[in-house]
Each structure stands twice: as structure tokens, then as C-alpha cells.
Image (cartoon, rainbow, N blue to C red; front, side, top):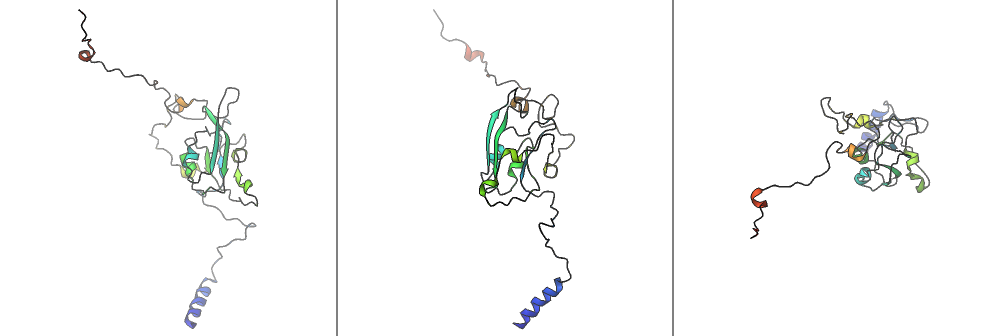
Length: 205
């Protein structure tokens, strides 16, 4: 029994000279690692258009079903994103979210990232359902967020992933066809020609 006490005191004495690992929050804040996953942010392009095209891939990838999206068609009078659609409603339920980053990995346009905002406590659960207006970058501000530390850049000899005329998806107006199969012809019927089979064997007298 006395040996266990001495053993515990030795551990205490050994660590007395070390600097504390705790900090006095909120007066002090710890520097977060670059890949820290905090609150979600929706990003814009340099021209002000929203990166989100309402494709639902982030909502489909979310294992906690924390993302709710309602998409709407773009129009010439109301151009919100470069694609055919944009997210009219984009809600993230942080009570469900497990901050796994699957939504960020699934997004084809880099529209959603998890950033360093971790001050998310609230007395009311409804305050933890963040809407598009709260998540979207303000106008005049455009960034790629934590994609700079998560996404590996393609090698210089690699072909561009989006087959557009300019060979880069820069947020300019584009249709879904331009983002996917821009210059390919639409599907056409394939007719097999076989002269022997196609010959009409019903000879008329």
C-alpha cells in the first residue's frame, strides 16, 4: 500500500516541472492544426457566383443525414451558380453532424469545406441547424478554404478534369452538359448492317 503511494508521488514530482498542457479558455485559445474540422462554409467563385450547383452529392455522402438541400433552376435573370441549378435551401444540422468531412470530399466543385470555427455551443437545439445564409461566404469574398490542405493538387502533366473549351472550370456560366460531356455528340442509335440478314427473303411472284 505504501509503495503505491510512493509510486504515485514519484509520478507527481516528475511532472511538476513541466509546462501545463491546459489553457485558460476563452481568454486563451489553442492554435488549431490545418486539417481541423469545424463548422461548414459554403464558398463562392471570384466572380461572385456560388460554387454549389445543387447536385446533392454531399447530402448523399453524409452518413449522419445531416445535410438538407432543395435545388432550383438558374435563369438568365437570376444567375446564382455556373451550373443549371443552385441550392435554394442548404441546411446543416450540427446536432447530427459527426464532422467526418465526407461532404467536403464528395463535392465536385469545392463548394463546402469544414473550417476552424468550433464555438458552436447553444442552449437551444434549433440554433444548431445552420442555414445557407449563415454558411455562405459574403459577397466580395471568395476562397477555397481547407481544400488547400486536404485536396492534393494534380500533377502538371495531368489533363483538366472538366472538358470545356478553356480546359478549366473557372466558375463561368456553363450547362450540365458542359461540365460533364461538353463536346460529345448526344446518344445516337447504333444500326448494325448485315447484307445477308437484311435481304428481303419474301420474294414476290
